Length: 486
Image (cartoon, helix red, strand yellow):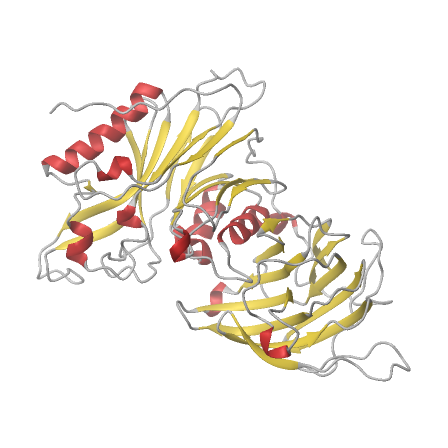
């Protein structure tokens, strides 16, 4: 069978390119090629590798917003399915392969796949086929290198969950191995964490159709947190559909990001960035943390030290669920209160005044905050804690300590989605987390990202500190996933 090859334009040297184009609705066989797509190009400085050493990722609707809550037959109809024997499916695979070969690129596409099964088999759907949300990776020679079937589905009734998680990765001559997983997978141990830790991967390709949820789970916010937590580079391609709250793609390194988050326009944007390749001998914070769970509370001094280079000892909270009053002679300590955030019942304490020290607990988790505002603003902030099983739109165990801007001036607005802030706050945030899997969140006004000055484990507590955020603070949080309690 012959078909026309679609070419991608060449770009400059030693750079990683990010291109996001506006979606074009279509139900024709051309649909997989005219829908949202993203291209990446990566090259290592001084490596001697040819300049044309790109990675391109492509997403289309079978794995995106169209599959959410859609029927199996609706998703099956647009002929976006690959790895089957139909002429249309062969055309899809051929054109992807041709695109990779003609441009000498590594290409990753998010499509759909089907696998026939006997109705008598266990788990076989009534229509006699499995349907999977699938990533496919092609090499620069056009060969199919790897496939990945999404394991953690999010209201994707048209798709099936594989019996066992896939661990998918492919090798490149310019940056080593790249791993793949998709969208909701990023919140779970299988396969994302297993893939990275078992195979020591440092580069990730991540197609997604992520619905932003503030204040803790916007796309760019958590993609950056994942990159930082595991010290990996992430090439994240999100569907751009502002009406559905699906925005936020980017190129992420542990210490810097290049993002596109635009809720006002359906147009795309080209992002060009040069990033280092992370090597396999570069230890992550989790791997190098020797002191997790160690008892280092002997000869403790105080938790108010402003120098994180000095020894800092943390004093445990005497009464879980209560707010501590550390300043003697203070007439009134801030009250604790409850409010819903991320569909969970958080315990909060407000930030009063220009500076202060706060502490609030839930179950076994205690959160501590030292803060100082540059100037007082007419904005309410609160420190919140949650330690429990999240059960809405997914079931997973969360330990979270979060400093957030509230939606208004009343306590009931704390936990609401907020996108703009003016307060510049210096802070130290720490907690006695029970899990080593901590995702540091630092989000500023306009859904922009900032980076901590210091973070990591110290004396059995995880800490995050920042002197003067680059813009008004929206969220500073320690988002812990206690996978074993899911």
